[in-house]
Length: 130
Image (cartoon, rainbow, N blue to C red; front, side, top):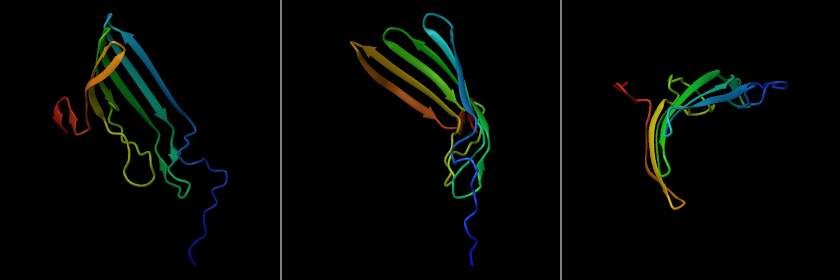
């Protein structure tokens, strides 16, 4: 006979870390330039209610450099700058990789247009392909 279901009473719920937080700060470098630094932390957590596998705790760092005036916004940003490997699902290989991105948008007469948005995944960095 196959083993019966495990008793998981009293166990934390899946995808529900005991502790998680996000903090950030904006630094205004001039009338048009700003720098945003963010960090986020998530405690270890069970990936599913059907098994005992846990995701490790992690802390991510993000940075954005922005130029903004009345009509233009140009933003360079990087997410997961330390290239932490994280797992956020129990099945498959889903997670966050380091991303470097740029966004250019224009606003006039109450209309907002995203003119250019692109992102480079973790395989690319400032020095080239890793």
